[in-house]
Image 1 (cartoon, rainbow, N blue to C red):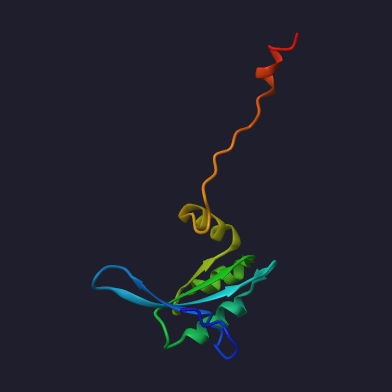
Image 2: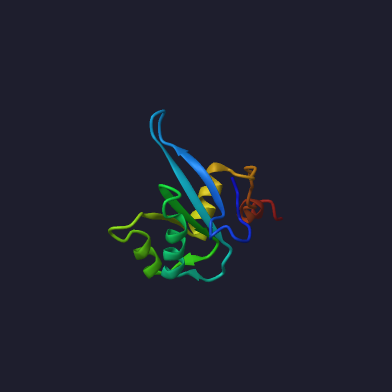
Length: 118
C-alpha cells in the first residue's frame, strides 16, 4: 500500500514480505527522487519513523547513498535498512521486466557490404 502524503512520518508505503508460509515481515519503504545522495541523517530519520511499526525498512532512491549512509543502514544495535540506489533499481527493473518489453535489435556490419562495391 502506498501512503506517501503529508503527515505520513516519512513512510511512503507499507507491505508484507512473505518469506514462507510461516514467516512474514511487515515492511515500510521510503522513496527519494534525488539527483544527489541520501545522507546518514535521512537514514536515521526513516529508522525513527519505522520504530515499532515494522520489522524491515527499505529506502529507494533514483540517486545514490553516501558511504556514511550505507554504514548507518547496517549499524550494529539497530534495525538494518535495505538501500536501493538508482543503479540497483534499474538492474532490478530490467531483470523483472517491470513495465518493459524486450526488444531485439541489430547493428549494421559495413564490412559485409564492402565485398559488393565494384
